[in-house]
Length: 120
Image (cartoon, rainbow, N blue to C red; front, side):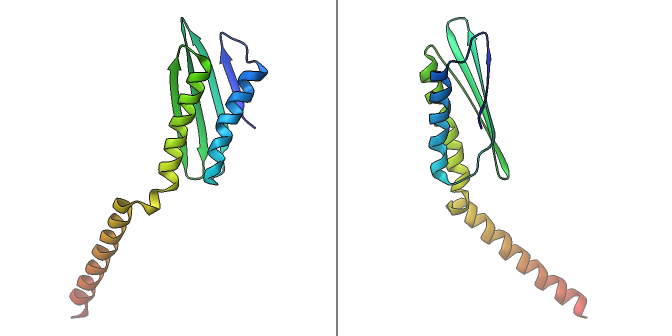
C-alpha cells in the first residue's frame, strides 16, 4: 500500500492511479518495496514530488520538480528506477567483484603471515 501525502492540494483518484502505476514499474526488478511514501507539494508555479521507498537492506529516495504534475511523477519514477537498478545489479558490477576478490586475497595473505609468525 502506497502512502500518498499532499501539501496545498488535494490528491485526486487520477493522481493516485498515476503514482501507483509508476511505482508498479519498479516491481519488474523482483525486489520487495517496503513502505513506499510519496509527498506532493505545490510550490508557486511548479509541483514538487518526493518519494521514499525501502527495499531490503537499503532505502531509496527521489525528488523531482516540474510545472506539470504528471511530468514530475514520471521524473521521480525514473530516478527511483535508476537507483533500484543500481542496487539490484550491484553484485554483478565489475568494480564490486574486483573489490571483493582483492579483499579475499588480502585476507588470505594476512592469514598466512600470522600463521608463519606464530608457528615458531
